[in-house]
Amino acid sequence: MRKRIVAGNWKMNKTVAEASELAQAIVQGFTGTDSCEVVLCPPFTDLAAVQQVIAGTAIKLGAQNMYWEEKGAFTGEISAAMLKSAGCHYVILGHSERRQYFAETDASVNKKILRAFEHGLIPIVCVGETLAERQSGRMHQVVEEQVRGCLANLTAEQVATLVIAYEPVWAIGTGVVATTEQAQEVHALIRDLVAKLYSMQVAEAVRIQYGGSMKPDNAGQLLSQKDIDGGLIGGASLDAKSFLEIVHA
Ligand code: PGA
Image 1 (cartoon, rainbow, N blue to C red):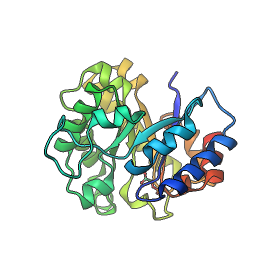
Image 2: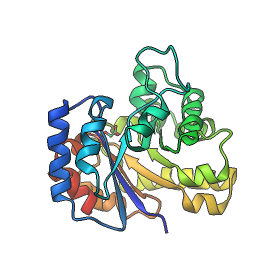
Image 3: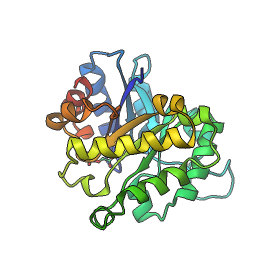
Image 4: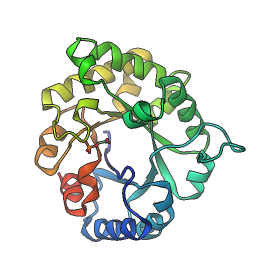
């Protein structure tokens, strides 16, 4: 049985004080559930403060990005070892905003994934097509290329451990959510591909989250689909009440 996973991607929001406050509200409202893992992914500057708040609870910490080099003269970058030492369990890699604004590619995401594993971090690997790619009928091909590129050179055990987030770019922050059928179709496609590249066993183990305008009022439906194992939540994760409603869904 795959354990569901709901992660809040706070993006570039919240000062240290605001992040502590939000994390406190989430801790207070979280009733604890064995069937769902909960992860908070604040900006780098808030990691320590959020870790303090969630210490001793079942809630886990994640980061939104990292660099693939071990350490050294890479001004402005953050390493996997640094994230691990800050208390992170997870790291989001290859988010579409990083691909769009910071020129990330499947190849660079792949290097980051390999490094993350070396340090015991679990990658949340984001894939998803743009509206133009969907409309031109290239959706399957685009998602397949991303999955193949990001997962290159990974062991079966690593793939079974990581999390894939399917995030159609046209649904992120737009309020336009994929229909349950649209989401389930791509999730099944990704799982089939993992089965083809690795094995049925790995495909059955890998968790695939949906992301893109997931909100309390659509989460239940999306999460009832057989290949949707959780959510990567942007906007709705910035409010404790709506985030917790999704978790409890
Ligand atoms: P959204 O963002 O929930 O605000 O659409 C999701 C994401 O980008 O991870």
